[in-house]
Image 1 (cartoon, helix red, strand yellow):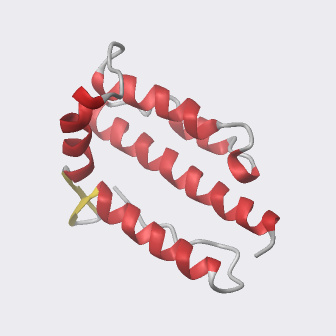
Image 2 (cartoon, one colour):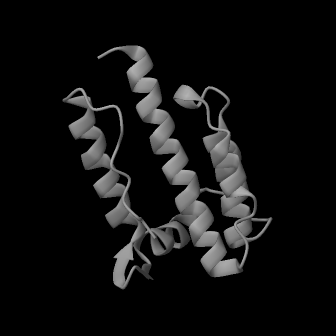
Image 3 (cartoon, rainbow, N blue to C red):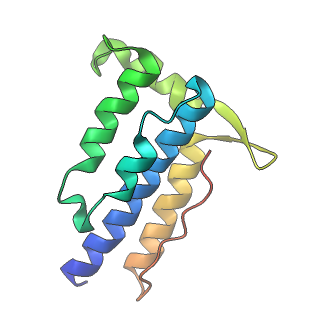
Length: 122
């Protein structure tokens, strides 16, 4: 597969992830903490590292400024990942959406598709 195509697909994955994190924050805290804006600026292959910028902002907004992603935080991270939320009348977990996105990526990598099917994760 051509490298530019892989980079474009990765850009879509990163944008979807950041937008999903923004939806979680909007639902739980009332603010997306600027994540929707960060998602708009993801470049092909995430060459400007917006995923990391968004991740730092997301975890601190969700768990507080003192939060650090380490072994002690595993329970909190697992709880958020498996937390059931309602979206479009269905109860879903963040994992459900990630799985669907991964399946779409595998399908796109095995074909000539240029667009991923990004489910409404949350």
